Image (cartoon, rainbow, N blue to C red; front, side, top):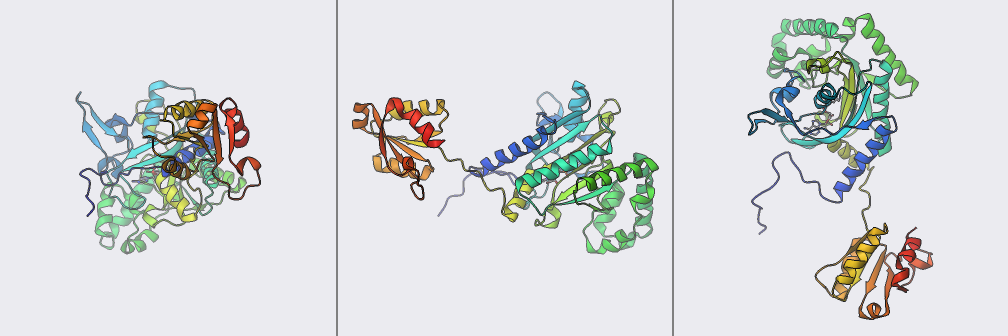
Amino acid sequence: MTLVPEFQTSPGMRDILPPESARWQQFVHVFAQVSESAGYGQVISPLLEDLGVFQRIGDATDVVTKEMYDFVDKGGRHVALRPELTASVCRAFVQHRPLTPWKVWYTGSQFRYEKPQRGRYRQFDQVGIEVLGADDPYLDVEIIALGWAFFRALGLSKVTLLLNSLGEPADRARYVDALRAHFEANLIELSEASQQTLLKNPLRVLDSKRLEDAALIATAPRIAEYYSPEAAAHFAAVQAGLHALNIPFTVDAKLVRGLDYYRHTTFEYQGGTLESAQNALGGGGRYDGLVESLGGPATAGVGFALGLDRTLIACDDEGVFASPATDVDVFVVDTTGGLEALLLTNQLRAAGISADRAFENRSMKSQMKVADRSGATFAVIIGSNELDAGAVVVRPMRTGDTADSTLSGQSTIPRTELIEYLQKALS
Ligand code: HAM
């Protein structure tokens, strides 16, 4: 009978173990390369902020009203674990007043008290970018294109792009009134759950996937009919920019997204394979106005965030972006007590050669077994004869299909020449 451990991860929270963790690291590395190639610098902000920072996301969103991990700390401050990073980045902008446009990228864990399922967790990771202080539709295109390039860099080919515009705040307000009137006039045709949503946020009714709501959503007024000339021009320029870059997209008038702060452009990247509710790999849009609501000057803002967890599921489903190899170059086998392995691994690592070893002074046979498992290219063996002679035996571990003579047989090498020998053989 296997014992169930007394402590396990909380629901919706996971340990990411090697080798999967190496894949996470590589994911962030690729995202950093894509962002930094476009002049974005990394912002690292706290996991915890004053609750008020996140309340500015809007009080009609579940993220704020139902899913926040908030508590009063020992100093009596009402704080929350961040559910997303856009509000934190805006808070940082107001606090530090950097030069604009401020172009930043980020990575890290977010916390939302949601019902856990595949692709939906209570602690999940995002990578994302935000730009503050530039109101230009081609900037919207730049960031959408960076996300697109990132998916391509991972090897994903089934991601699709949905695009919408929510217009200017006044357009959006008029549209929300029209939507509310439309749904209220036909209230009995709406599901119970959507009737509740209507009270808080009529836009979100458009998100309903319930069959009984479909007919009423299909006949609902369209946001495009409410755009001001400026909003229409902004949206047209975004579409023209995407066409110019050959990025395929579908305009989806129902794409309102879960957060309240969006104005003008909104977009979502969808995976090809996940279940529909968790199919959004990432999304974003413009949020002109969020900085002001956090006490800063009127500042344009645009950005997106991608879910690391969901994007990796999409990678698995498409069979791309496997865990990178984390094997060491050299495994040191020491049968003289272990001190030589301590010295040698230290020396090798200092010379830029990755090295591991066995502990607890095991037998030669058992150490060689571990060396085999380690995936190292070479075993470096020190027995008492080698120690006396000031030498080591270098044994290639992957002799399978190589024509390289250094990899085909074992050699005895003077200790003083070992580093040079290995550097050459590994290059
Ligand atoms: P969001 O749509 O709430 O947007 O989240 C972005 C992505 O984070 C989602 O598409 C999804 O991949 C991932 N995600 C969200 N919740 C979960 C969860 N419970 N489990 C796993 N993954 C999840 C934002 O967070 C905005 N801050 C994006 C943004 C940036 N807008 C402008 N700038």
